[in-house]
Image (cartoon, rainbow over all chains, first blue to last red):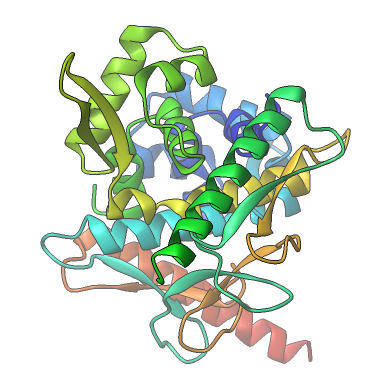
Length: 167
Length: 167
């Protein structure tokens, strides 16, 4: 798995895991809370929480000594997954709301609704499929390098055609 | 499924589908190309492409008349999924690169490396788990309203505690 997006998916585990992380961002932390929220079989939930914990997105903390009780909290790595969830939410709201919006992100202080877009941290310029390309890094496999080269060729030829046709 | 993020996941289908979309952003369009890239069983690939097509993320276009040959292209809705993939890639690069970066996003014109962050389209302010809250919309279910209310209570009490402790 030389692709960081594929690695990210593998690390998270599967579909249910993303909803567990969503719930954790909503402040849920206990097994019973996740179970009630997701309506998921307990053995699956156990496995998913274990996977997320072992992979560093959640940490298991004891919140009661007698009897011993544990809760699951987002680690810094887990909190950093937030943009993926926010991007999913924004996409769902743009394309899958035939009956209207059920929930959206708002600024915590002002309550103003937010419209998440992706920009470059340094320039503030929006990042879109039309203005990016893939840059192989130091550990790129031959396959990744070949793919990046093909993508760049395609972009170069598309850009040339645009200039030829004056657009 | 009253949650737009959960709906988005359902719409896309499953893990493989995200890698198919990634490949489509890389310019792949034909069955054989996806198959070679993903090393996926043909029956699974067929099912995934069908799901993505029926759900409006890809469209199936005939590119050759005799014999009839089809390719799969991203629809506008599919192209709009880009921020989810870019966010996954960025997360993977930040957390899952023990041996170094294999591939990253760069500006197509300048070649400068990009660091994707999520901001509000109107204000340009970064969107983080610490400055957002959930706002129920017109079609929110009772469950969604109750959850949003709990989240707001928690934020309000956290903010009160911050002020009390002078942070």
